[in-house]
Image (cartoon, rainbow, N blue to C red; front, side, top):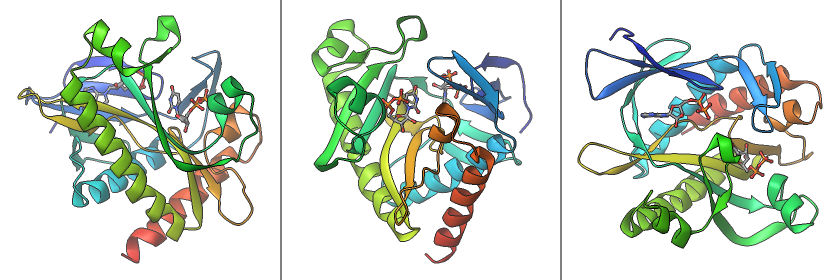
Length: 240
Ligand code: ADP
Ligand code: UDP
């Protein structure tokens, strides 16, 4: 499958048409941004790692009953995916307080929740992705009630599966962001990516951050952290 017209260039990926109207090619870049694009940089090798990691995790999730957009990894940076209409919600699942949750509610990072929390942000760069609740999303007409139920069920399933997966790799899954989309027949599937750009991953023993917070917070060792988390994932996949 070859790249056709470029449909979109985002902050982390480019999206291309293909000869099949139902399929797209996503191409992962090394560009990194944070704070709604205010901080910009490059993380060498990130695109290759995020492409591979997202594909391996999505294939694993599909086996556990979560349908995804993954079709075929074409090369180090490019993947063939099912084209969806993205539901404009950032679906965030949290197991431990961190990031915007800690800031918004004035609590420290690291509080372990009794149960996972699911929250939604409205995917809208101009508005800086504001928090949105179910009723507001329904009022805006961006999603249906039944779709919200499906999205929440899948999001919690992803959390259950990945928490266990990362635990076996010596990693604590703190929180993550998912995006879902609709196939032409309306079926909801998991889209976009699952990577250290979109998850908080802490070493279970030391608490060391092995994700994009190293870039956001200028902690150093960014490339090394992405390589380390990838190595742990590969080792854990091989053991399954
Ligand atoms: P952003 O738009 O936030 O800068 P990216 O650089 O990751 O993000 O761009 C990828 C874009 O492709 C995102 O807007 C994402 O919603 C969209 N996307 C991801 N998977 C699919 C898919 N299967 N079909 C259509 N669009 C997708
Ligand atoms: N996240 C993301 N894209 C976003 C916002 C958040 O992938 O546009 C991820 C982020 O990496 C973290 C989780 O979602 O794993 C929760 O992020 P949070 O709301 O704490 O926001 P942040 O601290 O990134 O501003």
